[in-house]
Image 1 (spheres, rainbow, N blue to C red):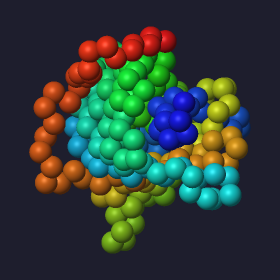
Image 2: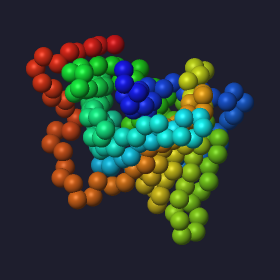
Image 3: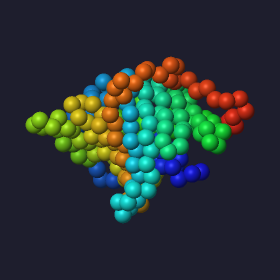
Image 4: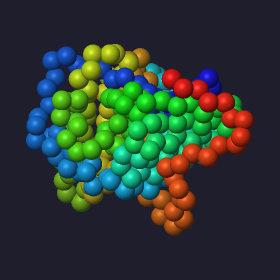
Length: 212
């Protein structure tokens, strides 16, 4: 699998680790869930950066993210097209260059991941994630920051960071166990036409289907 595809799948498929002694504040979890509850419908553009442990940029991708919780569509336009679609029960990844569709159970694919945080219903974070740090919005900046660690024991990454601006999603980071970082920056898809049937995946006849 190409490195760019592996970089994108970090956002979807990493199982994240908890620092064993950390426990989040219930009020912080409630605050984050309250903000994320307003994300039921989203249409955002994104830029995705992957840095190695030395801070060097090794991958870049850009695209569009549309969500009507729990359904979503994640589209990479550059440098290589890829579409990830979920109807709330399953998840499908379409790679046009490889002429392949990979189908997964939504629960298995998103458990403990950044997109799992965004697409799950309110109340699902408690018991799954701890808030290790929370800096509330202050002054004219309107910025708010959360540092999360999941309670699962599997060690693939160390933490998830969420930045909000005026209670809107601004940035999301995932740091892996080797010090590499996936950073996704969001902005509104202002001026773009709504997508027709965004939560359906139509692929050319003859496309290989892989179920796993």
